[in-house]
Length: 337
View 1 (cartoon, helix red, strand yellow):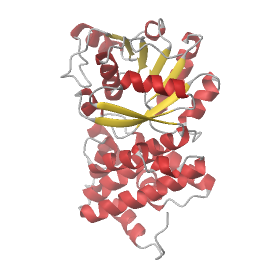
View 2: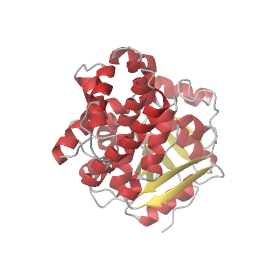
View 3: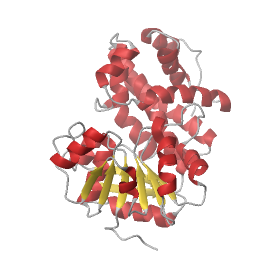
């Protein structure tokens, strides 16, 4: 049964990405309940009709209701969109599980892997909520500020439930926002997670002043690594050549709106990891994902030299310049994918 386009939806996570998607849905006529855990910020958002921290120059439509009470956000909805960082993903699902409607459907826009378990997020959802609930993931080349401002954007919605995927596409569709459907949940999730690690590598290269040639090589060979691991996990190569793979990789490796690229830039310019994270002052998903990808690559026997060097810079105190040297000094071999 097709969901009404104006049916209420809960957006869980009031950071920049949650704000942007909540704004898009509300402008499209959806009643949106936006939940954030910071009571002070959510109260200010409700009173001022704008978020004082994220996308603060944009006013909230009347159909967008901010709240710090997750029970209020969940009280009258069937569909839930989760946008919290991957580190808070499982805890958020556990909090909402007793509040879910009998016919609930869950969508997430979180990119990353679960810390410690290396699980893709659909696996976490199945473990916490069961494998009978309709689920979907939305991912692709999309900076929050540009989505919020109504600039042209295209993404992928992946689900094994075609009806749910089509309902999501209808809810998000606007004159400037287009969504494509896919049934390759693994491939879409893998692309969304891995591109963050590779964006750190591109940022490091640019921070060292290595130029456009080096950046292009890192993006291209990074895509190869993304495809290797994505396929090993069960995804499809063609998915990783699409919006949620190559598209997102290009975006995050080449534009300074990317937190992961900015982190790499700071590291390449000589800042410590702690200094770089403080300067960004938001979650940088690629830092934790680099650790999980390093473990996954070994578990599946996948060669990922770029991701390995990012891990070494972040977790083994390898100097960024030495990491690039180690990549360049690898044995000569044919170009393979």
